[in-house]
Length: 212
Image (cartoon, rainbow, N blue to C red; front, side, top):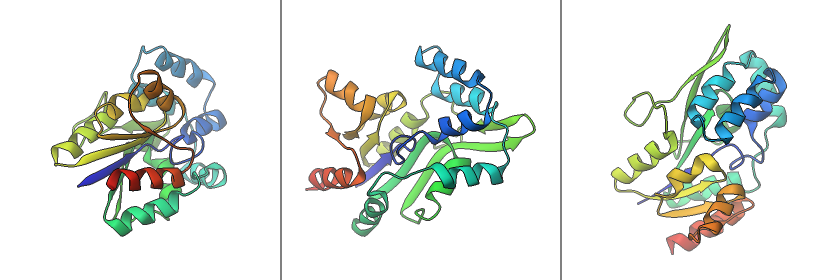
């Protein structure tokens, strides 16, 4: 059996919805936190905890903004339908938060699609978030990797789809990788095997090649 593990920001959607929200509704302090992550001084999970604490927005405003700005990559609905039609497990595993991911995927979520992400809670002091690993334990680092290892522990072969730095550790343990942007650059520079993609029609072709 195969499981497709797919990132959200810059992968399922054409931009980074989390960063777009921070640009629109948080103080500029979030960029200094992002810089710490870029330099490898803090984890992506800690980065998001600090950054989203700066985000002061109501749920209604957040969802309205997401509906207006988030854009799925071409081919995503068709790809999800294809996975369902052939019985392929599809899991969105993201360091982003459910508060903005669920509205984007609402019309696509079905019994064949799972979502594992940070859980966000809107408070008077910004959005507090928590990551739970597959066993319900608070995850401070390696959230995506924890889910990949869980899928593999269940006897699944994992096809990983991603785009960036936070996808590297998990993708290195995947059975197959479909990459774009800096994740593709990494795999190319390291001489590792991968499939490249620009849209999910490319992903669909790669999946069919893998499953032959």
